[in-house]
Image (cartoon, rainbow, N blue to C red; front, side, top):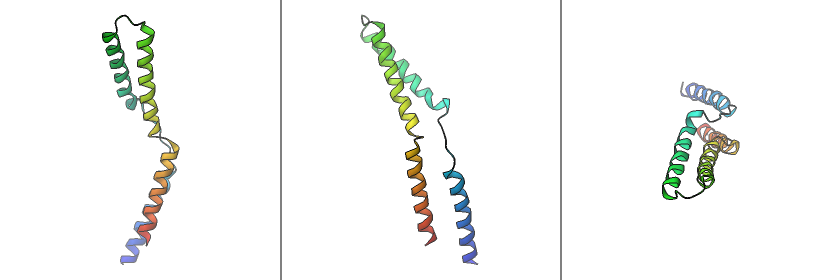
Length: 98
């Protein structure tokens, strides 16, 4: 009985692993909202601290902050990171099978 339950659990895990490992995700618009808010704050702060700056300087700082934040969001969906998660899941599966 124990062997059947373990085998069934292994089969379920394998199916789940197959489904999860073959799905690629991408960020949603909601994940970029904090980036937009941060860029606005950078722009406001720059304009408050340096009212005599050319507007282009503050806009560029704001844009740079947004792009850096966006890269971080995309990094969460990087295929290398996904591959690393797959490998960890496979190692976990193998350790459970023993």
